[in-house]
Image: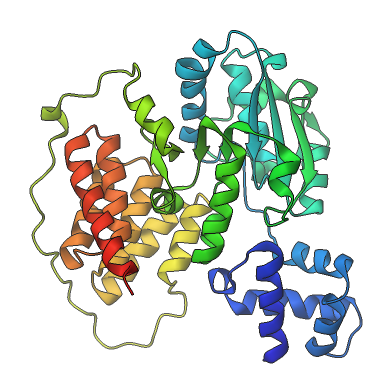
Length: 411
């Protein structure tokens, strides 16, 4: 359908969205809903409308964007933020304000979690300020209202809700001490003037968004983040996005369990700074190369399972925090199709997100046994070994990843 393809191209130019990341059917569903809402005869007529209407373009973006977030999603990232504060920022800044950015901020759970983590770390409210930006005005409106239902509170540790929220009808309303720390506004990462309108930040949370872009768009977005980040600042991304940063002059920080990156020059300096001693190599010895994974017998012929998910859908389950479901679905996929580098790498990502570094390393190694040139598995194994304190082997796999990248980039 030509009109739908043109709309997908328009969405990519406006918000960077790669249609393949969510599926053309999801975009078509949103478009058809807007066709009905605008009382138009077909998608061709809607394409003509949205091509000349900024207001309708925003309505289409609102229909595409479906917030999926909760408070303290990936709690280790917020723990890493407070470690960076205590060990590095405060010793260098006896005065001044810590500037942080949440992009995209969705309905506010992430920036408010950042504020609560810093308040719990006893940082005075006048010492930090959080900017929170999202392309969705509706999400911004929800964030400013700061009233949340039970779906925003997941996991077992909900003590923060007792400290910072008040019951409000059948929901929970955030207290002013947290709300006043965050400034919300609508913004578009792909606006040509975006970096100049925001300033420079000591820490940026940009998680679970780069995965929705294609390669050139990812490079553009990372370039914007680079301009927004202070020379010695820290960038927080999701596990599935960590491999992207290594090819764009970023290096992992020494914060096990969280995907924290610095600009390459600053990372070299921080590696020499005072950090807690690593566990002795004896305790984290790298296991010998794995034997070839045992191919599980293929089940007797049967009708295809209608509920089977693709590997991309499995990873999206993990990005939504449904780690147990993602692990189960990934194992089912491997059971049905047999092990492959892609499926074993996906299992490694799920283990990484579950803070199970040893098991993640095992899956990455199995993926590399089947495909020694699987660049993402090489990169993620290097990052995982660094978390485990095995810097020497981490460098070996990082060098292998660079050689693979160099070969693939040759014309």
